[in-house]
Length: 209
Image (cartoon, rainbow, N blue to C red):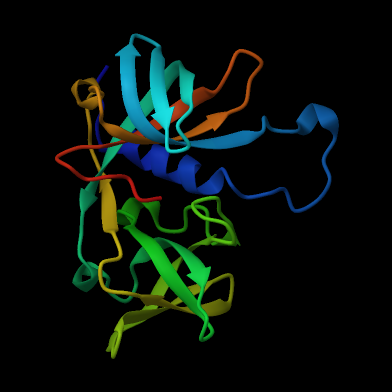
């Protein structure tokens, strides 16, 4: 199976949108499967099965759905963030007010608008994910603060020094090796997690989302 940037874009869209809750009640037959985010390192990969030791220490068997997609993350820099870029920023409320970034994902241009909005995220307790367009990026005293806009709203997020900044990159099955770190947005199923996408770290890069 060829793994190129196109499925990587599909992966990013689904990964960031999977945490969004429906805006209104839906009929049972229309409900989407419950989502779960799996973060951990690969214990074994074989065919349509991926065994992962999660960050919580549990070993999970993930079934890979037919046509599943694979992508990786590549290192970027705070200085790569430019006005007009579309970004996904996981953040926590700061003691002094506003939000402080936990990680920043710079989306490829083809993904502008993917999962736009700000909603709860499970990277850390009380964290949120904001997918939005950068209105400005200015250097502050304690790092960089970006102003992002989504659905007519604006939000300022501080990006402390050392915050992981990444972008989406291609990957192949050869990168699914023992110890490789993965982020998997999966569906809860009776037989265990079912994944349509996998995001893998390579060259020492860890998916920070």
